[in-house]
Amino acid sequence: MRNYPITHDLDASINPRDAIPQAILDQSPWHWNPQETNHQDGESFMYKSDHLDWKSLGAWAIRRANENRVPEKYWWWDVENELAMHAEDSVNHCPIYETCKQWMVQNDYNEHNTRYFKFANEELEEWYEPLRNMFSDQLEDMTMSLFVQPPGQTMPCHVDTYSSYMRKTGEYPNYSRLRRYMTFVSDWNWGHYFHYGNHVMQPWLAGDTWDLVSGIYHGSANCGVTPKITMHWSGKLHD
Amino acid sequence: MTNIYTHSTYFQEHLDKNGVSLDNHYEISPLELQLDIDYKKFIKFADENRHRAIRDKEYKPRPFLTDESMRQAVMSQFIGYGAGNTMETNWGIEPEDDATLKELLGDENFEKMNLDRDTSLVRLLQYNPGHGIPLHTDSYNGFMKRFGPGNITRYFVAVSPWDWGHFLQVHDNMIHHWKPGYAVEVQAGVWHLSANFGIAPKYTLTVTGYKK
Image (cartoon, rainbow over all chains, first blue to last red; front, side, top):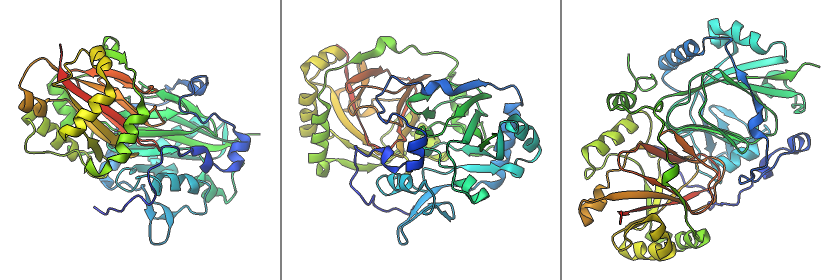
């Protein structure tokens, strides 16, 4: 495997807040102490969705992942050019950049522990319409992504900065209007982990749906033995 | 076709064959303790003794493991675990370091765990963000080779304060938001895993010994 040293000494006092764009901090103030217990982070659970046969969608996703075999998405640091890379795309110009440096320069995240399969929008084939219908009344300029996270992989802790939305619309996001919803497509299993702010979600069932309010630090990981599958909708709240 | 991204991995089949199911709750509350430790002393010890650590030890099959542990390591490799996501740094293999760690832990905490201090082995583990140890059971093979069989058990002890992305799973119990000194007995044969998917290093102890 390609290996390279972490370019800074490990630092237990890294504050994720330092990497969050000021626009998000202004619009979505949040507590930044992981030991904080007086919070409402767990109250963003919306409902258990019976809109779809989630297990069939999960089976579809696994089949598609098996056809590809190579996860399309992963994070890595281009040492030579000092670029934060998401697969083949530099995100140096995106608001996630400073967080990427916390992951990949100050810590040891790389293409070996951040890989996932992504199926977006029309790639969802026959699932596109029914999935779109779930939130089309709430969101405009909506994008949809289904993620399959294999064992041993993580989506490191971050605040949503809507880089894909930026690429789609060409606009710098108005975070006060942007929203992301998430549904667990697979049941919770060994080593599946999702923290939303200071709330750790566990156990969950396929169909459990969360309103991922902007500005809240979150991350997910799969340290288990089966894939973790989640579905995400992003867009602007209708006026 | 069965392959690494199907739900029916060899690992899942192994769990099913052995009747290991998350549907069966495993109650850990009687096994939990709060020890009194000065966690900063452990991290200071780590920082001052990095040259003595076993560094960059990845989770992989090793010839001295038991057959079951070897099988678990092979199954983990087969589904994607390796050097990129399982690196560990640890202290305590050297008798001098084991003695220092016992001293830092203190007699009172050994009493709370009901372990014989003289024959216990203490390891300080550091997992950096992005790394963890996948699902496994403990065989105590190394301990038994040194001290012989008996009523052996192991404690997980949290050293650094909980931070985002740190967790321990003991069967169906996801453990997080710990304070330094949180301890749980992880008994023989109980499936567990631990990981750090946050942004700060995770320091923990394992304390293996005979129950008094």
